[in-house]
Image (cartoon, rainbow, N blue to C red; front, side, top):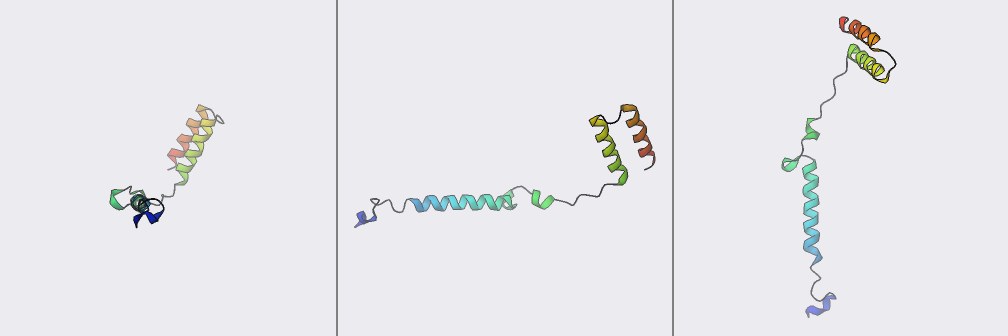
Length: 86
């Protein structure tokens, strides 16, 4: 009676493993969305404040100095002018 299953009675073996794997996958997905004490990065994302023109200009100036387009003296002079015009 039990030997008709083709796998000699082990035809229910894959069901518990499949169920456990589905539960684990569901838990990981739920945790990634912030349930069960997972990461809260999705909730903490705040819109970035727009940069002021002065800070953007200082970023560009710093980048130009880092790439060697301008020397240190020119960088100091221009950054001082930008900071005074805040």
